[in-house]
Structures are given as structure tokens and as C-alpha cells.
Image (cartoon, rainbow, N blue to C red; front, side):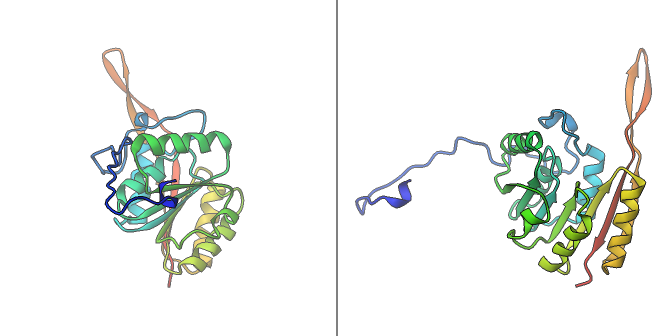
Amino acid sequence: ELAGQEFAPLSVMLVERTKPVFCRQSRTCGIPDDEFIRGEVPMTKQEVRSVILSRLAVRETDTLWDIGAGTGSVAVECALAARWGRVWAIEQAPKAWELLGQNKEKFGVYNLNTVEGMAPDACRNLPAPDAAFIGGSKGKLEEILHLLLEKNPKVRVAISAVTLETMYRGLTLLEALGFEQVEAVQLWVSRTQKSGANHLLRAQNPVFVISGVGHG
């Protein structure tokens, strides 16, 4: 509103920030799950996020996409890691969209931009990514990968999968499209749970992370 107005030449304006920016001091990947605002929307767990960021090899100035962002847990971690870059979180589910915005505000990651819609159509006008995470593709994984390569032939990609079929499709598509350093990792994490005076291991659902780098 002020930008469209005229003021006397010697005018001075004081701006005070009221919202936190990068309010989480530590940028170590793998933020504890309970720090995120959650709901009924599935969330990528702490240990899996650590591997995803490692596979994406996030740099401070990177432009990143998080496709099927859900609650925004991966997008928030990427935004903290790419402090001088930009992150675009794409999500089409209304409940997830609301949580995504809430977590953006909570962590003060204002280099995180939210896009409401479904990939690949919602991504066509976004800036070319240095790296992209695909957490959900709604059956359009091949089209999304083609768009990523069009935007940046050297894009770094990580895909999460909870079924064998999705893992296999991700692996074969990356290889068929000429990606290099293609690899799939299975994560089967167990966490301790108190049981009286003892501790039990409580297994989390297994997750596959498939990754590759565009051939350029």
C-alpha cells in the first residue's frame, strides 16, 4: 500500500519485524516429528527426512521443489538448509494445504513458497529447480520427471515410496530417462518405547527413497 503513495523527500520509515524468521536456530536435518503442527495428514518422519535431504544434497542457495508437500515437513527442512535460496511446496489437498501454511509460519521459513494445485500442471511456471523431492505424484510420476528435466537437465531428484510398485516405477523411470547415480534405499526405523522398567523397539513403516541426478 505504501509503495503506491507519495511522501515528502525527507520522510523516514521505521519497520519492525513481528514474525520470526528462521526461528529454529539449529539447521541440522531431522527435526523431531513433534515440533511440527500435525493432523490426520501423513507426514514424512524425522529419520526419512534426514536421508531425503542427504540425497538432494541441498545447498544454501538452491531452488527446490517439494511435490506433494503434505504437512510441509520436508519443505521446511529444505527451506532451513537453503537459507539464501527458494523452496516451492506444491500441494492440492485442502487439509494438507492448511497445515503446510501453519508450519511455514511456525518455523519462520519465509523463503518457502506454497503452491496450491497438482503437479505437473501447477509447476509449469515455477523457476527451474536445482533439486526436487517427490513425496506424492497422484499417478503422474513420469510427467513430473519429464518436466523436471525440461526445467533443469542436471536436476537432483529424490522420490519416497511406501509400496514396492512405486519403488520399482521410480527406479525404472529414473534409469529410462537417463538419470545418473540412480539408487534406492530402504529405511526401516525402530524407536524405543518405554514399557514399565524396560524399553521395547516400536517399528515404523518401511519407506523407500529413490534418487538420481540428471545427466545434463
